[in-house]
Image (cartoon, rainbow, N blue to C red):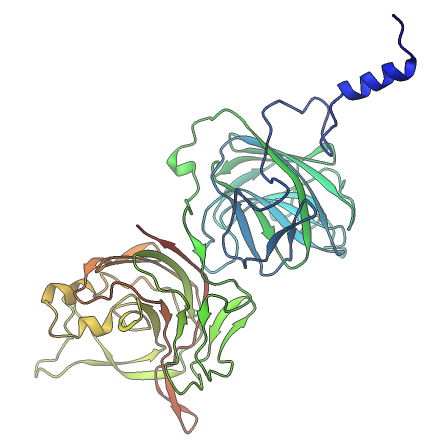
Length: 461
């Protein structure tokens, strides 16, 4: 039986699958799965951004660009092909797709270690286009990751630049196809491969979308996993399971600002900043709104400056006692000093010091000096070493509190090793400590001239 030509054409149309936007010929294997369901952010976790930095609208993930930071997949991936569409909503917009990244940011910055596939609008770097950044497809390692650039290489020798500029300007959509396999990254832009990076390390980790200053949209995000090639633990990124941000970078949503503070606890360029001059008549420290029991806390901090010379800093011995001279007089050191700390479970006594004393930060001053405490407790809350970086540089505390036991890692070094502290409250808020006072314009005690960022917490069961 003969069918009309119109019917035959209809059958052909129905039989042909509708292509994914920007899909290359022959690139539609049956095992694609969505990384974005088009309705909510299931499968994604904010790392160091606000709850509304990434939202869903009209089938798209919308990034406000504020603060600068990232959102990650809820699990790690090793070898895969990932595709997505993106567009910037203003000329010169900046964002990124991160591969094989850590679950927590690198110290003192809003980005994780990993491999970045740059997502830039054509207006970003007009004066020196393709000399430092590119409008699309600049692949490079960030913050401790490694990669061998291939093809057209940046002058600094660290970046692979695309062989052609194929991105469309804001507000048009662009399509990325990234093949990330056995430490090699191949990027196609709008249907053509343009950039390659090899020998990437790590080569297993999370996938991220980046927020960096301006509105950007993402849609049609899907992944096809490829067979494992046995990434070792050394080739695998740091996990971040269970951590949620306590500081959004743009507001005090999770914190109680002291009543009457008058703006001395503030957010300065997406960093939590304090000048030690709170005008609050009560407790001047900054506390979380929620209480916590057992937890692991990551917090980056730095001392901005040390305008006060402390004439009473002690030389603390490993057993927690303070050194004395031949006459039994306590030895006092005169040092430039600043003083703050992390307050545990609502208790000012149970603080982890941030200061400049030779014993180092992480010391629990009030516990160490409490002579009613057993000697082994006083020794246990005395840092094993000074692991602080110089004033002005960022440090990282990794603090674990379980029951009455506290473990503190500072810049990768264990300074308090599972100290069991009688009387540590079972539950309470976490505080950032105020310290310092002025008289006649001069500091009379070490001020808390500090900044904090990348504060995240994991509640433990």
